[in-house]
Image (spheres, rainbow, N blue to C red):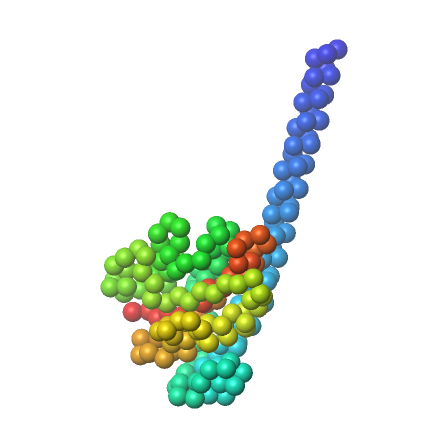
Length: 205
């Protein structure tokens, strides 16, 4: 009799464990779906706003509180799915592993990552695994939209080189000739900055 009771207990335990795993998988799938939906919405908003500023920088001077009157107009960036996927994975990685840096925790920068993903770069841009020629990143607990992130990057407060502004608005010859863009946006409750965004503007060579 006991062996049947034991067998029944094992079956019930297996059923409960399977249900628990199924629920965890379901919750994970829901979170992933929500994250991708948020990314789709906010990355496209950021892209649209960025192109609007590039088309007429001077007209955004008052809104952004910085003088863009001398910044040359640039053509619309072209959305690139490879860059967008890599940007999303970078934003997600920063959030999930709780860091904020152009080089990830494994020592890889964006030149390596986008080349490996299929957006081929010239050899001279791949001399170091940590190299970054095409990435701007932003994060902040109150930066809850892609538009806000783009605004902060263009303002570039505290960055003496204005490197993010130059990158996003194509203010150097190198970036002026970089027509492709992908943006990733990610939210992670409990992470240091909560909201993270990666902007890639790159060129094939």
